[in-house]
Length: 178
Ligand SMILES: [Zn+2]
Image (cartoon, rainbow, N blue to C red):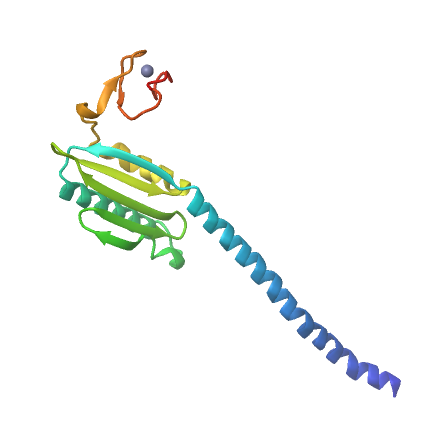
C-alpha cells in the first residue's frame, strides 16, 4: 500500500516541483534579459560619437549620397547573411530631405546624418553614431569628396598644416591653438 502511494506520488511530486520552479526560471531569464537590454541601451545613448566633414557638393547631392550609402549598407548586410533575422537592417527612422536622415540597426544602433548648407557653397555633414558603427562611418567619410573650406582653417603655428579654426589643439602635432 505504501509502495503504491510512493509510486503514484513521486511523479506528481516531480511534476509540481517543476511547476514551482518554472516561474522562478522564467523570472531569472526575464531579469537577465531585461538587464542586458537596458545595459546595451544605456551604452548606446551615452557613448554616441559625432563626426562631421565638409563636402563641396550642394546639399541635395550630399543628401542623395548619404541615402545611397545607407541603401548600400542595407543591401550588403542582407546579401552577406542568410540569417533572416537581420534582413531589416538599417531601417529608416526619419528622413527629412535634404537635412536629416536617421536609420536604426539592431547591431550598430542609431545613425543620424544632419546636413547643413554652408554659405559660399558646399555642405557640412554631421553624423551621430554608436562606436559599433565607427568603421562604417570612417569608410564612408574616406570615400566622400571631403574638403575643408579655407575660410574655416588656419595653419598650425608649430607644424604649418591646415587645421580647423575651432580646434583646441593641432591634430597632427598636438600643440595648443587657443
Ligand atoms: Zn601642428
